[in-house]
Length: 89
Image 1 (tube, rainbow, N blue to C red):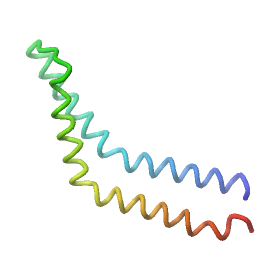
Image 2 (cartoon, rainbow, N blue to C red):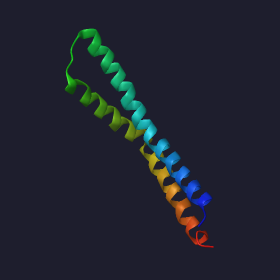
Image 3 (spheres, one colour):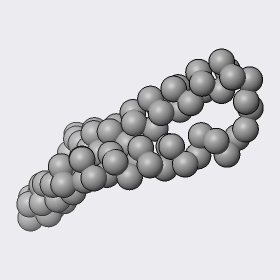
Image 4 (cartoon, rainbow, N blue to C red):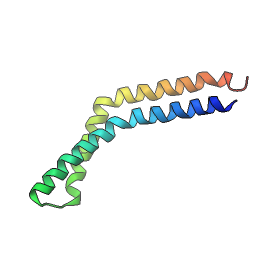
């Protein structure tokens, strides 16, 4: 196994991690910004106020993107397992 192969696998793993985590992070970021603006406008600085909407946004993002996320992870695992016979040649 050479260095280029290890770097290629690591780069692919990082890219899959970014792709899979991006929908949930973007939903939580959007809800956090909206709640932050509302809190700033109303001067209500309650930390627990943003928790439930973020949790709901994460649940919705899993509902919408969950199948795609699982498919992406399965494709990555399949590519890794397909590379195993060629690792030590």
